[in-house]
Length: 135
Image 1 (cartoon, rainbow, N blue to C red):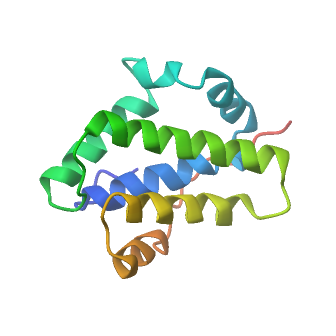
Image 2: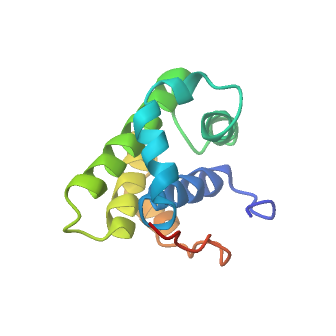
Image 3: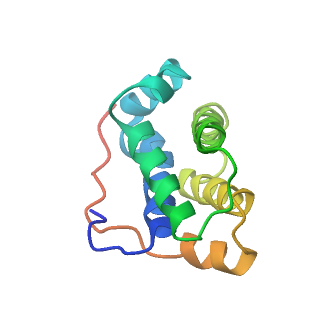
């Protein structure tokens, strides 16, 4: 979905925004991620591998200021898991709004300027976001 995007920070943020929306679009998959917790960080496939690659690319491009990619990946996963938990247990706010706020905070945590982080989080998501699954 993001093969034509050149900015690794945008790829990372978009992937994270879509993952945060799994609570709404794919609640069973989101629940599996919640139940897996740290195990997903060690998996040789899936979200963690892609997130690590995106983080490394953003560092190389000068978009993120990070000393330890492993810690950055753990922060990313921890924020997503906590956000999904919040959306499942306290659904008073829009899942999309909560996911986007989380991504904004992570981008700032990774050294991005406020205005640039807000610009990235405001970008439209790919049109072929998966349809919500029935519960």
